Image (tube, rainbow, N blue to C red; front, side, top):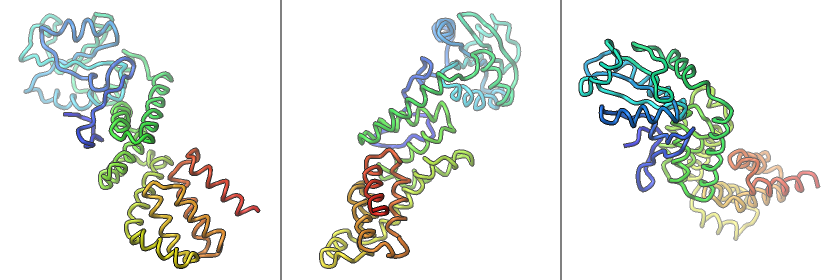
Length: 317
């Protein structure tokens, strides 16, 4: 079962399987045994630092440390791995290393113990420890995450909802405050008809994330969908326009419906038609609505670019 908090169902569970710094996001944390210690820790640490968390089920401080260290390791996005060892089941390694108190975390680098700490440290100190062992997050990691977000957006445009969601989910595991990935995950949910899940996901955004235009656009898209559901039967609106092409109220409603159906060109054309025929209708409502569409579609969307040209010709001709 995925531990991705943004996982949802598109014909199955979405699981992150993206590489960050050489480590699959789903393989950053694992349990080990005495028999597997050499492979999981010694050999693995020749590729990247491995933190070994020695713990036991009866240990209260261990239970405090576990969610903290797992969170920080995920945020480290592959700069380190975490391997957990239950010393009740596998006491020999801890004994060989002279560990007498738990929780104890030992960092292995290039096959050897390099550093460590004991006790349930607060999140800031665990993060500082990882930075000390693996170095702080650099520009390469940020560039890699940005590239994955871009790939996910491309998949979403190609209607590969599950593929896009997997990538957005992997980014969110590594960088939970990535606004672009959260907005992208919400758009995947919207595309799959999971509107309540999308709104829930967006509600989880921090105050800082909520300021991002991508989050604002996803929320506006949800509002547009909910509004369009209340606007009536599109066939009836088409009939009304066939009878009276100057029924601007019907045309405005139909534009909103076509927008949420994904026919952006038709949506824009309806609004532009209203503007051509009556700029004063409902206080320039068609232009204001079109600008709302642009905000959701994004400035680089072909529909935005085409409609902006037509809008300019109406406004400045």
